[in-house]
Length: 622
Image (cartoon, rainbow, N blue to C red; front, side, top):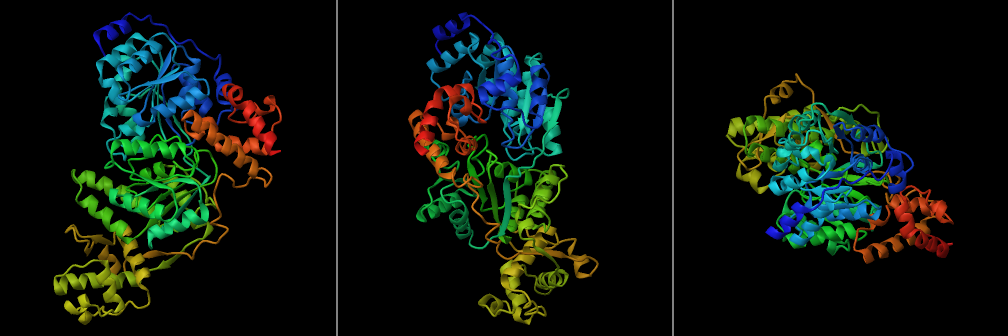
């Protein structure tokens, strides 16, 4: 910024943005088109409107954004939102502008003239909300600018980024305690979609929210069907899922490595699925272009590393698939929560196998950091493995991780097709005996494949080379097939009865717990994979689900109109209307603007802008 521009900003008059609405309820109905708050939204909003601090834990899709957007419309001044995702600020501002909220952002993508215009608007009281990245606060000119304006509140979005032990740690979040120190009279609201008790306490401590009121909503997302499948040609398994249940749907596929992202995206494209890659190794312009297509076009599948997804506000993501084991339940919950933000039926699907367990164990053993750090990583992995191997309801186990007690959901794979628990003590003893004999009698260590070949009595070149046919355990495991034995190995690793050696070759070794199993002091219960789910359990989970037959074609015509409107404006389709709103319109068939205005999600601004066009679509469909 030139000296002349800086001088002009410094001379600009300062005016507080006056409250736009007399009450939170008025803002909710007039701006956003909703009749009532959900859950604890009303109490959270009132806490901030009254000038108090709040720490909010609420699931993705639970309505966190309204908890700071509405107070910013009711309080005097401009709400300042700290968001870690520069790439998404334009979309966030577009969505707010569409409902009549005066919003802007300051970040490194803008030129000097654009920044100057935003700063003038802030100082003259013309903004309801101003978005900043946390690193922007390191620039002294930004803090000086905020000093000169009138701030209604600070909202710290994705607050779990402050946790150094978390899966999305951002160092710049550590300096956000300055908000309280520099502007002690301004209320702060910190929000996250996921946090264990430990992360919750860390957010409170690092952001100096000791006096904040805490709000912890239910972490349950009943519209998401959680399913974890035994990995067996995972790309083909994924393709079958998409073709049978999610044809034409938008979704996210997570892979652990960049190479896997590229290969999976290419595989899907070759099989007629419109898929795009996203990872840190791609050119930044290509990454941005792929993200933009995912947000703006219908039916795009994004194949990505976990670097993608935080802050994505796309409500109609119908599935999230994992082709590799997540490192923690917290990360898994955050990633799967990107599905079904609109509350419509969605799928969270994970393919999980023996190699996943071995790979994660090796990564922990070779990770940087002290023993305590590795212990924490191991604890996270153990909880994730327990979720994968449970014979109980997945949702009950998932919610229990966050301290929430629940009952079986009837809508996860273990509820729909209950797996069988079986006594695997004898197979475990046979496998452990083989590992022990190789170590003690031959001073050898091998991976799962060789050990299983020994148990099955296979005369392979390696078995012959090492004379493993002479072992007393050779051929004693023919009661199980190869895949079943791989399941035994996987579950013994998950239970800590077996371990991956730190030699980097994936060889297996015994643990302190092995002796109790070998000595029959400890039994081993294992999970037997159920048969393929019934077709009823694998029904298509799309935006058309449960729509009356007469409403389905109207819904599709509304989506076609919305797509054209979004393309013309250059914004994501959900900025125009969510699928949930179009479903309600297609079912209710309003015939007047007044009737259309009663539909959920149709506020005054959108009614004025799109009302006649929607009535025209309905008239043509009639």
